[in-house]
Length: 328
Image 1: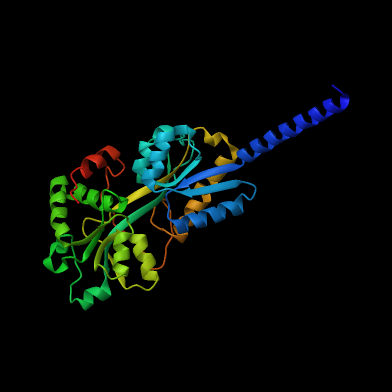
Image 2 (image 1 turned 90 degrees about the vertical axis):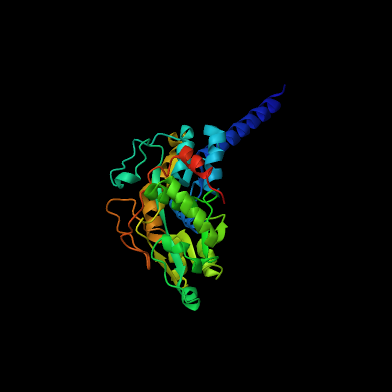
């Protein structure tokens, strides 16, 4: 073999090694986030992350919370994702074997009931629900504003109430679970059997009830507080009511796939999410309290919400047993 050929082979080998080195470097700077937050919140989060880390290749993919956790549970630590964002706590618990231990993170600033005892996620958000009414339609139909869950059973509200289906929506399930905790399962399920006679629609998504109010398809909706506030701020004549049983709620968390915190880019992105963007998210979109000294507020957002007893909301086995009794 001539010296020229040897030199060419040597140069080719160097180029190959450099190419692999470049791929490895790019891979180290890539962070993949599976998010179950709403699109407008994802857009804000990704924009801020790209501003903070211009040299990182940050990819954010939306997946509904159930599909998100099911994907992680099936793929385990071999998943493409590095970080899970805004996933409901019950599903994170179900996928916990694939999640990193976050016990080294300081959670002293969180409210006591906002801390995962297993340290597999940090709380990202609390989203609550209320009884939302279209005040214009109530007046047009000559109806009184309901004052209790029992009032919703009155015949004058027949076909005028919208609720999301607990089998497909976390929002619907938190209403069901809150009344089960307040009244006992038997009485709560009997109540929803009666309420079904007045239901215009059991929607498949949590946004369905408020959307039905905005579109004039329903007068009363068992909906999400932050969604109702958005529509109020957009000019829709809605009112949010909370009955004696309190406001039902669920929490979402942010987690890291086991083994990925060793990657500098992932750790830096996760730390920025939890130390900076979590608070910004409360200021921009959902001010409900998860921190002890939280002082975020939003125009027309209810203050000092009295929450329901949501014990067991994050128990997926109990959820499956309860939903097996749901008829609709």
